[in-house]
Structure formats: C-alpha cells, structure tokens
Length: 432
Image (cartoon, rainbow, N blue to C red):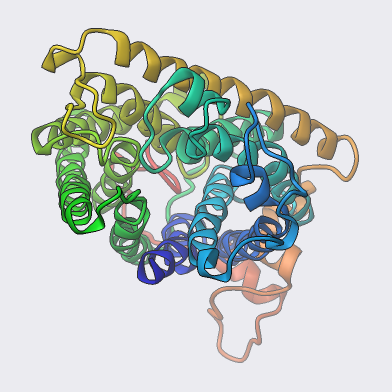
C-alpha cells in the first residue's frame, strides 16, 4: 500500500502536470502545472482534516459527519496508509478538472474553487461510492459497482470541467486560432507515467477478504491484467478512429488513448475478465477519439479534452460493467452477455445519472458563487499576454539570450511556435 499510494500521488505530480503541460501553449504551461501542484497541497491537507471523516467516518446517504474523525482523531496510526491512499484519489480528481480551463481561469479562482469543490462535491461522492454501507447512495442503495472511481473520480471531474467551461466561455481566438500543444514530448512522458501510476490506482484498490493469502493473488492478477490490456486496446481503438477520421495516427492520439483506456477500466478492473477488458478498451478508445471533436460542433471550449476523455470514458467504463462483468469478479455479478440480464446494467446506468446530477448541480453553485464574487476569468490583456506571467511572473522558456524570465521572454514564448504544418487531426492543445 505504501508503493500504491506513492504511485497514485505520482499520477498528479508530476505525471498529470506533464501530460497537461505538454498539451498547453508555451505561455501557459507553468500555470497548467501549478494547478496540479497546488491542488495536491490544498486537497491533501483538507482530506486529513475532514475528508476522511466525511468519506469513511460512518453511515450517511451523502456523507458522514465531518468532525467525527476530525484530523484523524480516533484513527489508528496503522490505518494512516489507507487514509493517505484515499487522499491521493481526492487530489487527482480535483487536478483533472484543470485541463478543461487552460489559459483563462484566474489562479486565485482555482485556489478558491478547489477546496470548496473537494468538500462539497468530492468528499460526499467518495462516501457514496467507496463507503459501501447500507445508507451510502451509489454503492449501498443503488448497488452500482465502481472498483476504483469511474463515478467518483472521472465522471465527477468531467462534469465539473464541463460546468466550468460553460461558465468561463471560450478562449480568445478559439476555435479559429490554432492552439497547438507546445511540447508533445512532455505529454507522451506524462502519459507513460500515468499508465505506470495507474497500477497503484487500480491494483491498490483491492479490498482483502478474510484470507489475504488466497484473495491477494486472485484480485491482484485480475486487476493488473485488465488494466494493462484495456489500455493497450484503447490505444489501438483511438488510433484507428483517428486514422479513419483525419488520415493520420498521431502521438497525441496514442497518449490520449492511454488515458481513455485507463479511465474506462478504473471502475471495471476487478469486475471483468480479460476479453471484457479488451472490449471496454477498444470501445473507450474509439468513442473518446470521436467525442473530443464534439466541442467544435457544440461550441464548448474544453481546452485539453477533459470532457471527451474523462467524462465520456468514465461513463463507458461504468455502464459497460453491466455488460461485461462476471460472477467470479469482485462484485460477484454476471453482466448482460453472461446471462445476468439487465439488472446490473440498470444499476450502473443509475449510478452514472446520480453522479452526473450531483456533480453538475453543486459545481454550478460553487462556480457561480466564485464568478460573482472574485471572478472566474482572467482579463483580456492577461489572457493574450499569457497566464504564466500574469499569474506567476515567470515564463517556462527563456527564448532570448540575456533575458531573465521577464515579460519579454513570456511574450516571445507566446508568439513563438513551430512553423511546420499542423497534423490534420490536431489544431490546438488537444484534438480536432
């Protein structure tokens, strides 16, 4: 569990920071990475103070008493590892949202949004999903399976990202201006680290039975294998659709396919067999590759495709448990194709609906409160010049000899860019 916890923390810092940072423009890469690092600091402390108590402190339909285990009072030090493990889930869920609002969300607004969202949205959702008491809503009353966070993590973050995108509005120049990734090498590196860290995410979510000597190898082997195969299938699914739609299979498509597969297998890792994992991965990769283009048709500016990958991928993985789960899996339920009928599929679908509504409504309330107090969006001049310098007084790259990271460097970074023709399937910091 120590290793699993460290791996999941690595998924946010530095893996997600690198993944998102590489897809950002050069004038906003530092801000993009800072949003992950700051989210880790804020959510981590809040989780120990009240988050663990709200999520795992006792019975409750939506959340437990925040002060029952305040600052882990009454929690054995031997249980601190599991607390830290769950803390890393809370951290990455909040950090995932940041990719949708690149270039234009005020850093001060992010610092206010993150703790409010964690307390009001994530901690209760974690209780509904992971604290499987009779009273907890999604896991207990509905009975939806979620092995490691398809609803609480990915759907939750994806819906919150969509809400912020709609309230913030489009970036200046989008979609006419090309806003390409500034460093796909960083993105590929981040995707690889995310894949590695996800073994802590999924395999670490094992709940031991009465006899760990028999339960451990059974659940570990299944979860490790399904996570691996689903991700591989998603890469191929994404690249095939990308090739058909745009004529090229890109490195960004491969990196995004990795994440889509990992997202989709998160809720299903312990429930499905190997063929089911491959099917879920192929479906998730293909559908997410198509879904990231919806923003151009529907007009919402999701900068780095959090909605298209995490919301869509989370829904796919959660719902398809009802199709591909097997009775010898963690949930002990046969899905539709194994003769289980529509019962599990209905439970999984209802779990998705609850997660979408809960996250959507409460995130809207939080975001509107911030919008009409301190404001959500950068002013136009700061957005054009670059949020790195406006918010942090720094630039990621010193592109002129003799400069020291001042505004001239930032403006140079903002205007510099590759002169080669962009891939036909990509026209910004994510996907066309």
